[in-house]
Image (cartoon, rainbow, N blue to C red; front, side, top):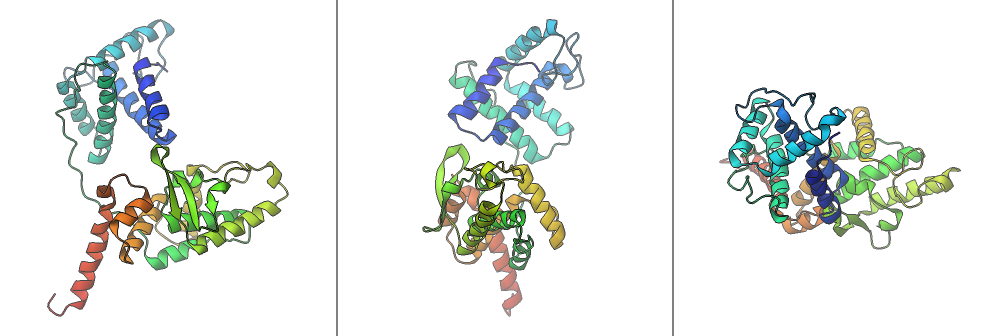
Amino acid sequence: MIEIPLISEFLNYLSFERHFSPHTAKCYAADLKQFCGYLAGGVSMDSGQAGQTPSGYTGGYPETPPSGTAVAVATDLKQKLVAMDTEQIRRYLAHLGKMDYSKSTIARKLATLRSFYKFCLRRAYVQANPLASIRTPKQEKRLPKFLEMEQITQLLQTPDDGTLLGARDRAMLEVMYSTGIRVSELVDLNIADVDSLGQSLRVRGKGRKQRIAPVGPTALAAINKYMGLRKADPRSANFNQEALFVNKHGQRLSTRSVRRKLDKYLAQAGLDPSISPHTLRHTFATHMLENGADLRSVQELLGHQSISTTQVYTHVTTRRLKTAYDEAHPRA
């Protein structure tokens, strides 16, 4: 793999100064890798069509070229990055459009470039931000998917909490629905983060910002049952003694494992297989608003920096109110 110091510096900035999660930093790295592959000659910067790659170099930035050309390619890419202008960015966006990327995906890749060039401008690597006059594509408004009360109840009751792993899975699902935390925040929980007396969890969110999340007695009971079975397991001395949720080998659970477990229980419960851990977060927020919680409180509970992010849930509850009105009002 070709290392471009400028990009490595940016990724280190995201991880160590902005405290982005490893997953988010990985997504930024992938977007920049694709952009550099484009600049390396996979697509001509002049015509927007397939072009010639440098001699002896076939894969763009993601691949490792022959040793004699690696330095030259890296130098060439850095020069292209710092010499970037608005028209070249527009050509790249047009290229992404021709590849049938969705508007949301293009917007995310554009956000990556926007952050990268803001960083470059602050560090004086560029004289002007080439994305300053480029607007983010208008997104299609999509209402968040969520589960009805009977569906979430069915899902929560599916794991067999008579076994250690089943009790762990029941506790995980209960905690996600009870608190609305992200799956990355769930797997980052430590045993010390659980305050049973205060009925709360200490959650480390995006940018390492901590918040206190209230947790209901049902979820706490599920955690306590899981911890009881875990302590009784003869292998428990070898388990990670810090992490709250561990895998069958006693190591901290990954977000991918949580997704796999959820898929398993969705299949067993006969629920929509497209439901994700984030759907439980949507379900938490929707049910809170439907039952009288104010938007500002839900914002705090979700750990949203801006209330505009939380306002998407009002469209869900407003739609349901309109449906109820249409069904109940004599002149609707």
